[in-house]
Image 1: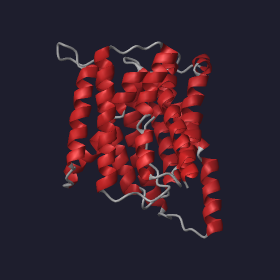
Image 2: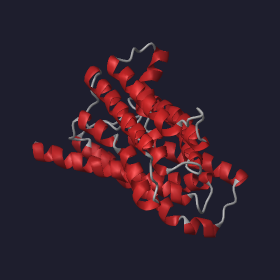
Image 3: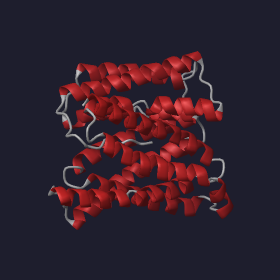
Length: 310
């Protein structure tokens, strides 16, 4: 059992690494195409790349006699549109923000959604525990050190990433509401395709789309669409069949650390000592917030998917 757990943890660590370095790919892609063009193609590839996995899971469930959720067509379409619109808002703000900030900072600020989710539960009269509040304070302190200047201003890119984190948190809540009713993989594929359609519509209106630009950004687009969504999502599904939920949540939160590492290795991004301390506080707050939800709330079933915005 320990060997199996270690293998699953290794797969989750690889998933977090892929998602973290996706911020680097997204940042590089902005040198050649507009943010909405990048997202439009990336999420189209991501949504289509999940189709083989969906087919495999359907066949596997049929062989084992396991019934998968079968929503009405109306619920499936409305759920996909709702979730796709939320991911479009979060991904658009994230991608535009990357034009003005570093991959490392974007990764850490986006990761704040794990702290925001339980706090947003206040609107549904859910009381976050002490760990969540402490995690939120640590994360907020880290954000201040990372992004707020001595004149109490925040950079444009960092602000867009922060607003985007609230949309990612809203997306997680939407998925949590829909997942018992709709097959999670099919919902994910549909929401990615909806996000792609919305992104391409905006790109056609506001951006200049050229074949040469797409060709030059091809590697970052393929990384973001196929590797970050298709392969990493598959690894997550496989790993979370046997990995303890506590391991999965904490390991996947390392995505932000890998974003900073990737920015340093590939893009020569360097954080000041103040920024590094801010990142450490933010990561501590994220992990503490997730540990609170894991130990004081009902644990998800093995194999449950946790949405990640990489």
